[in-house]
Length: 134
Picture 1: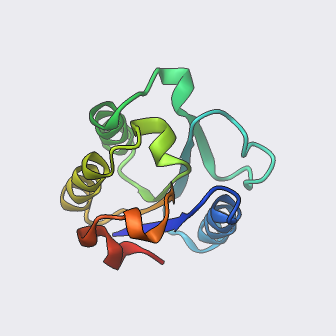
Picture 2 (picture 1 turned 90 degrees about the horizontal axis):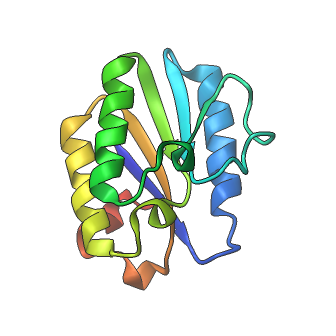
């Protein structure tokens, strides 16, 4: 399942995602992972949320990100939720490529819930992705 938290810079997307991740860790029957560019969320997330810095692994672009996520999930089958902050900073501002990535993730990992923050206006979001907006 894919969920998108969208809005322009400063609209509270990351705070919403932090709240969701901290709540998920309380109810999840598996592991909760948060992926971000940098380590800004270290003190905001509960210590039971696994925090992964894409900069540490040189992740850049959507193809690389998909391979990275695939490796994480292949290595730990009991991850139930993955939260990704600022996906456009990781993959780039190409919203068509983002759409392709999200549809691939949904198809490949149907049993894992993914929540992405996307710094974009609603009008910029491709039509096929609008049903995922929360």
